[in-house]
Image 1 (tube, rainbow, N blue to C red):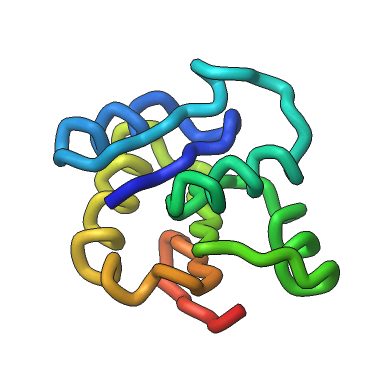
Image 2 (cartoon, rainbow, N blue to C red; image 1 turned 120 degrees about the vertical axis):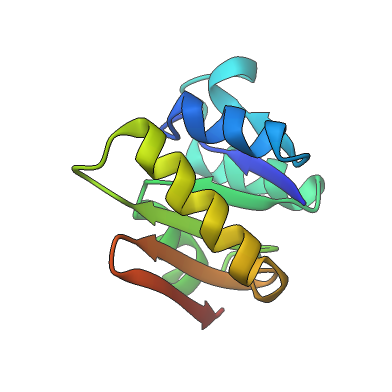
Length: 116
């Protein structure tokens, strides 16, 4: 799968996805501090799922009607970076086929996938 990782995504998550064979463009490596709208445009241009911990993307997608190929919101506060990476990898392995064009929330209690 192809991902754009917002700058707030932990490095171990990006590394784990790459090791699993996924393509990941990490905003922190490319152009940190760019505007959320540009991050979303980058994901759309690359036909990538956007990984973020920023709830502002829900505003962009649902309230402003911004088109998106899919957003994955990671809500795993309190877990170690390594544990977060494991949870994200497992969620993508189990539900990756359902995430395109959807707004997905990965939380410690489970995965929620919603149409946009």
